[in-house]
Amino acid sequence: MNDIEFSILLPAFIAGLLVLATHIPLGMKVLARGVIFADLAVAQIAGLGVIIAALLDLAERPLLVQLIAAASALCGAGLLAWIEHRLADVKEACIGLTFVLAASAGILLMSRDVHAGEHLKDLLVGQILWVNTNQLIATAVLTAVLLALWQWTKLKNRNLGFYGLFALAVTASVQLVGVYLVFASLIVPALATYRVKHQRTLYAFVIGIAGYAIGLLLSSWFDLPSGATVVWAMAVTGVVAAWLLNAS
Image 1 (tube, one colour):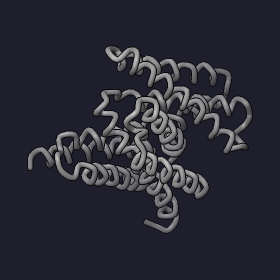
Image 2 (image 1 turned 60 degrees about the vertical axis):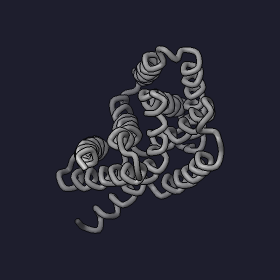
Image 3 (image 1 turned 120 degrees about the vertical axis):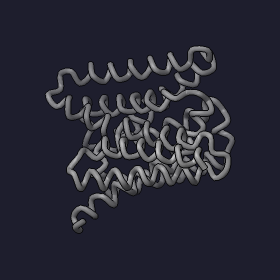
Image 4 (image 1 turned 90 degrees about the vertical axis):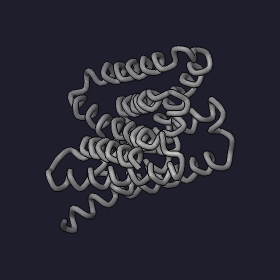
């Protein structure tokens, strides 16, 4: 691996670590609550905010884009909290429908944009290889704040508090790695270790870190799309790890 490849892959790997830092504990909570599609729904709603900001020609004002995306995600979080409280029996169906509606709204908003296909690809698959230092620093600060709130407050045990933390974490992550990789980071490590009784968090992080490392290396060696490659690498790693953990 040459210096140019390393200088691109290292920031991407750090971005993956930042995503995992919040998404592994969130993913375990998501599985426990039975709201698997919540991540996709909130990520898509955050992406909808980014699309709206782009249509308003705010792309050169990243802070304002982040605020619009965060506001959109928090509105989505409020909706999901209401669904879980009021429509608990059919919450997964309602959350899945919310994702489809948000995705469809994004397509409609981009329908007159000649670059819509590329924008949609960036939103779904992400551009993890092109993250910059400013994005990493901002995400690291937000990650530290969210982890502190997760660890030392009772927000995660409250309906609206959980979805609020969830929304802010997803808003930052989806702009780093895309909707698909955000979902994989949330679900694969948590799902692969859901039967583990001891050191579950440690095993989940090993799976997530291995998935990002292997996926990024494979994407570099074989010139493959990085986001999609990492998703598959993490999924295969999760399957192998689950088999080994359950066999032991």
